[in-house]
Image 1: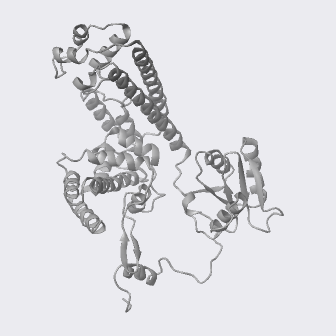
Image 2: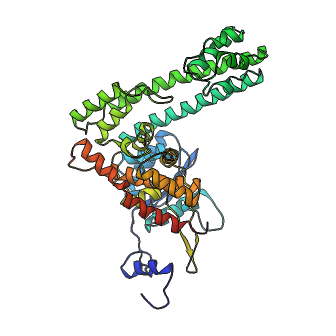
Image 3: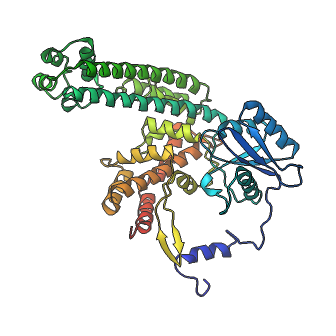
Length: 465
């Protein structure tokens, strides 16, 4: 190591000596035929390199015909690659049209293409994006292929419906509280069998607490006397009206969720099967003798479909259930090649420390603030590892004791993401083994040795926080 290069800067200096991250004296245009687009809700500004067109910046409206006109103009200019900001959902039609014309489209985080201080205009923004992209200074966001994009849209729509139904549950509880009907104090779930039977009877006109308490399911812990006491309240007309509307809307959203499940099942039949037929038969037999469907789970055998189209069983990874596995598949797809390593995948999820080094010292190690559905699902799955007897469960408890619950959840989600990434690489292997062998390969990344290495990594990264 060179004299004077010590501490946290030594790693970066070693990378430079081996040719990684080399600093050049001058910038070279890596993408000479690059264009930049400033996306807006009503109009888009497009910039091409100077000299390829008399007018290097043009404005296009957001209508579909104008988007096709934009693509044809870029073809005449000899453009090969296009960069644009990820502005709301307005970029999606532009990206689809440009990809249809054969352009390489890079979706860029708006925080990474901020213009230099000074006057800000749409014309300057698109020119700045074009200039950065021509020098290869922009990294594109992950965009799944069209096949996975359709599945992602269906699954996200289902999630929105579940959130809307949950809002109606809160409104039902609010109406009951306004009438001092403490149903949620004696039932763990007011939308269960007992709760919904009682609520529907109240909406239907029944007011006698003893009659309502007789609708108690045998598995409910509280007695009929306790439930009858909780159902004694002031049944005011305005609150009953609010309760009825909340129940009607809840039933409506449940109906739409069932329709969405039917569409998802139909679409998943279009995927090619990658699993051993004999293994699928055994999984189907297990499903028939397995547990009952839990709330918010699809109304069809989602696990068997996931095994069939992926060739691996993601639910064998500790903490991953069927819903989490579906979220990973619908958001990331089967091909993990866009992420060179598992570390790149964890960084995309925002689950690894972001070391900020200055003056030879590590100033910050907090993870990046990333809004990622897969990361959110993995963090929720990590919380279920507290009572697990697996190696990943022991890792979570060890991190919880050292760093506290929030950091332990992030660390366990990071470990689970590496296992999921290994599964994704197993899915995209050109020659596949049987389903069980692929699953063992995917789950092997959660061994005790690897988890101990993650424990050391997270302990060092979070010292002094």
